[in-house]
Amino acid sequence: MALQTAASIETLAVSVYQTAAGLPFIQNGNKTVQTFITTTTTQHQAHLKAFNAAAVQSGGQPQNNPDPKYKAIVDQALPTIKTPADVVALALTLEDVAAQTYTANVSQVSDAQLRQLFASVAPVEAQHRSVLLAVQALLAANAANLVTIPVDPGKLPAVAGSVGIPDTFYPTKNASPISEGAEQ
Image (cartoon, rainbow, N blue to C red; front, top):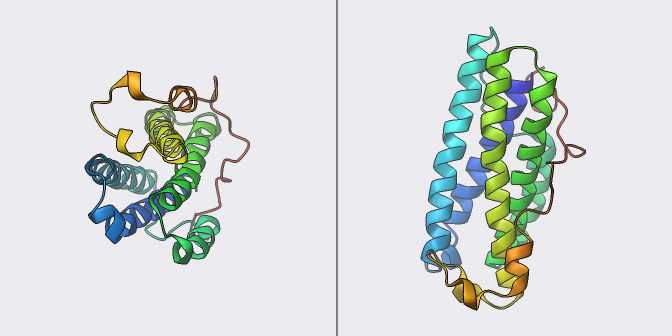
């Protein structure tokens, strides 16, 4: 069930990033953001594939349906998306639940290979969240022009350097239950 729930979160993340990539203000906007979306989508597709392969290898079924709890949140948010900041806010929700869920799953599964899988994917999702937090801070500071790679650190507002890693230890209080996205 943990693998199916993880796959359901990844399915939804892929869908959200693909939808975001098609938005005119993303397509015609910041090239760094476009690259982030493309790279992140590819990583989520790889995670989905890995979670489904592990589910099958463990005797279960693959899960290609989106997480029902977060799909409802996405369905509510999509019609209201008008700006890059709106996309960032939605992506942050998904990246955070993914990182929290996979961090929690490390201690909830008994198989060493599954623990390793969750432990290897969780920090990738946390990294996505860190990047999005920094982008969100730049957008809020009216500094979208500084969303670049490489970046000139001397031009960054102070907030951009302090928001990316807000937690010493990744929290799990909002982790999805193991069965949330599993096929019943």
